[in-house]
Length: 89
Image (cartoon, helix red, strand yellow):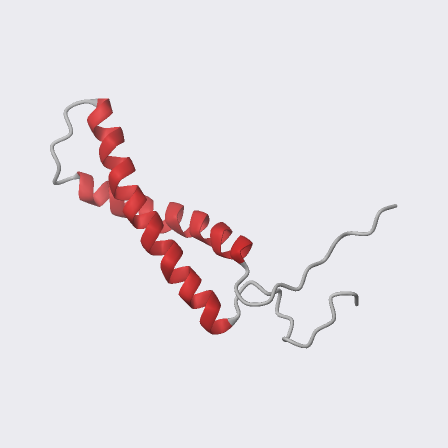
């Protein structure tokens, strides 16, 4: 049986940042897009889709930057291990 690979990323764990960006954007960004669409004139489905993509992209980008800065400052996403933890144990 092959052992499971383990990593001990130095710096920011980009996998964690992207996973949290996805989840946070869905949970927080969807209601924001819905609220902003109430004031917009969106007569067709293509207009609605284009609006959601434009606004959602900005929300995704801002969320990714905020989570990256958070991970860099706090060491989030490292599995709770200290910087001197040995990944072999």
